[in-house]
Image 1: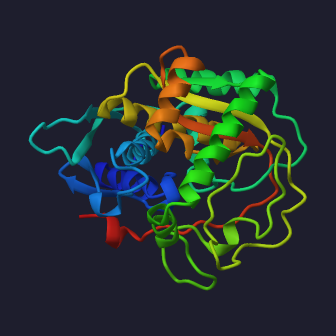
Image 2 (image 1 turned 180 degrees about the vertical axis):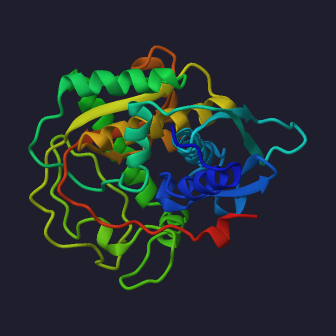
Amino acid sequence: MITRSPKQALDAAVDAGRWAPSVHNTQPWTFNVSGEEIGLRADTERKLAVEDASGRELLISCGAALFTMRTAIRCEGYEPIVRILPDPDRPGLLATIRLGNETEADEATWVLGGEIERRRTHRAGFADVPVPDQLIESLVKAAMSEGAKLTPIRSAEAVNVLAALTQAAQGVQTQDQRFNLEVIRWARPPGSARTDGVPAGSYPQEPAPTEPDFPQRHYAWRHGWGALGEQNEAAIGVVAVLTTRGDSRDEWIAAGQALQHVLLYASAHGVSAAFHTQALEMDLLREFLRTELFSGEYPQMIMRLGVTFDDKDMPRRPLSEVLE
């Protein structure tokens, strides 16, 4: 067993946390290291005021960063001790992570850790390559281990409903200038040196619609940005929805941890995810999904899982910007 010093382990965890997925790649987190403890805080200046007024997506993003740091600490040879929302007087402090006993990471943890910087979000259709049922079952177990539920949508009728609601929400949001301006704020023009947001080359200029169609965000609204060459990838992949029993702040954080566990495991097996949160950003549609499709559980993320041969880099803010 190789155990690094406490400082090395904490530094590695913070560095890893930067690579978590976040809505529009906003990276809405900051980290503070005090002694042998990391504090994870929400960067509310990066909250989406229109799209995410409740802060749900922000906390899911931060929950993903928390799972990433837990994984990194185990790979460094320590058991992480986590407290969620430890101080009611400091609502922006989402979690603390302390170093526990020295431990030897198992093979599964090493596999997850190896995907932290390799995992990528996809923003188009997938290649016509099937996702094995056994892998989907493992992803369901991964989500369950973090206190959430991942449901693969096997019914064609239910997939059609999710696609139709995504299309409807996208259509409504496209007509709302506030939504458009907020999305554009996080869209990076070609050649931009920004270390956050969605690069112009990370989505196709003319995406081929899936069947049924799950539309992506209009990051290139009125600009014509986007990459060429991915139009032929149009398979829908496996549609899946992440839910929780409740809808509190700690359950949003749990959903983020479950999401990242799923994504890292999928990435290790050559599978990527495309996210579709439009319908979940409209209260009426989200409530409809909760009551009609998910037996009262709260939908936290709609995604498609599939194989893509696209492997573009995604920028990350340097440590100097996220470490307090």
